[in-house]
Amino acid sequence: MHAYRSQTCAALRKGDVGETVRLSGWVHRVRDHGGVLFIDLRDHYGITQVICDPDSPAFSEAEKVRSEWCIRVDGTVKARDESLVNPRLPTGEIEVYCREIEVLGRAAELPLPVFGEPDYPEETRLRYRFLDLRRESLHANMVLRSDVVRDLRERMWDQGFNEYQTPILTASSPEGARDFLVPSRLHPGKFYALPQAPQQFKQLIMVSGFDRYFQIAPCFRDEDPRADRSPTDFYQLDLEMSFVEQEDVFATIEPVMRGCFERFGGGRKVDQVFPRISYAEAALKYGTDKPDLRNPIEMQVVSKHFAGSGFAIFASLLEKDGTEIRAIPAPGGGSRKFCDRMNKFAQEQGLPGMGYIFWREVEANQENRDKIVDPRSREADSREIDEILDPRDRTWIVGAGPLAKNIGPKRTEEIRRQLGLGVGDAAFFLGGRPSEFEVVAGRARTVIGEELGLIDKDRFAFAWIVDFPMYEKDDEGRIDFSHNPFSMPQGGMAALEGDPLGVLGYQYDLSCNGYELVSGAIRNHRPEIMFKAFEIAGYPEEEVRSRFGGMVNAFQYGAPPHGGCAAGIDRMVMLLADEQNIREVIMFPMNQQAQDLMMNAPSEPTSEQLRDLGLRVLPRD
Image (cartoon, rainbow, N blue to C red; front, side, top):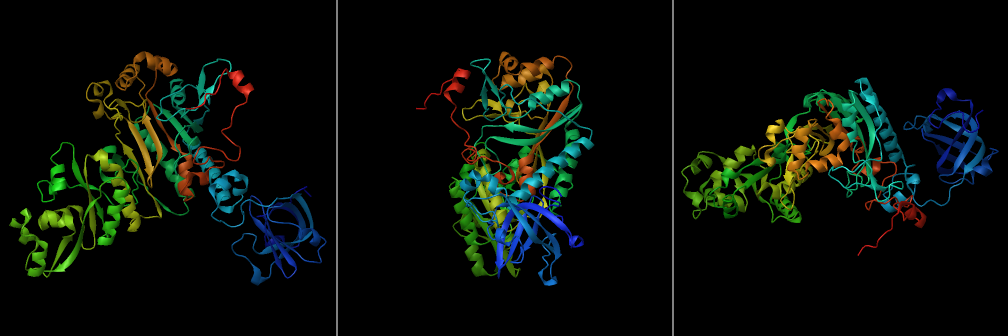
């Protein structure tokens, strides 16, 4: 018999009754039922119940074992009584009568429990991550991650891609985040950079004549942590293709994503059609370039209903260039309590508040008409009010709230009809320059959808966001790249001769349930267009040649048109595992301060290490 096990702790079934077996694993828990000990023995594969009574030669040793001791058990497989069968376990019809126990590794007092899923401080969980990973949910997440990576590889191979590895030590590149720098011992005063992405190398692979490349690539970015982003490193499915247009990339990655989510999504619906939404449309309707399409709310521009109205705040705002009023429909949100709560939300986000209207049904009579139409209002003289408040009707749908009172029943009704709302519904309004309120509007849309139960939780909703602007203005008014700097501008060189802020790129993201999962572009493979694109962003030709010399040089020797994308594996698994924090799907994550508490990283270098590198650490002021 094998030194440690003849089967795993998930393998035994009723057909094995009577067999002598050897199992090894961890003590999941021990239960004492009237002098009879029940030990749940756990390994990577599952759990088997081990029973030990006073007649067993191993009883005295079994009395000593504690939770998370690593032990070996020899025994005989027995069938459980019918009333004691556990249908939740694959091994639930049997138990192993213990005849011998060997302790392979004792466990000290546990700093956190492994049995069950208690909510424990994150600092403790990360410091003892090797124990945290023994918990059922985290263990399942890591197995899921492994399965997803294998699935992605198989799907890429099936489409004729080859996997190649690109360097980890490279040169700095403007990818939108800070680099991690690595000092060179052989070249004092010079530094490597850990790659933010294999961007330049995968393009060079295309220039080298390898038609379809992919890899499961580690990427390193010195970023601030978020719930959906690791502050140091992450993994992505990275791919590149030659002689392709944008739609070819979509046709390649869509079945990979769709198939993976269908296989590991736990039965949740996966949208079969991935709609194309322009960046401008996404910003208008959803307030974000990664919309959650499970939420049916779409924002609309309603400026015309407020221009020249009795609501002076919006009316005067619209007299300024570049301003507009947007409405966020809220089906089912027609109560003053909910509207006041959302107004408070906007204030917490740094805005003065959100105007609102909610609609209710009232009896059609003169008393209610007098309440609705303020005779002092400029809106009260409209001859069209009778079309809204027809005295022949039995009931009227009317807007309520200060904003409705100010703009009058006609404008209120026009807003309701434009938004497709009815009795019991509401709408919220934000105004100004879109750049000043768009992000908050997007958050408000999400909160409204969540609180009103409008979001379909049993669904993965994908959407391509396309037509990204190539450039944007930074806080100091300078033109900079807004997305991937190596993208081909739509219209080529001619597009770069006009207003930079009007240039669109062949850039695209794939969003799912409010997260960006894929980002990519058709690449700028023409040196003259590349020099011009970087010049607009403030990079002269000599700097481009200096920083990207390898790629610029390669493009002079027959570069093919090419494009690709990268899918974030960590975020994919986070969605598939239904987790809210990306650390729950990373084996050994950093904490919120980008520290590895288990390995004590980052750590101070030794004096000898600094001498070898010709470096010294200066204290910060």
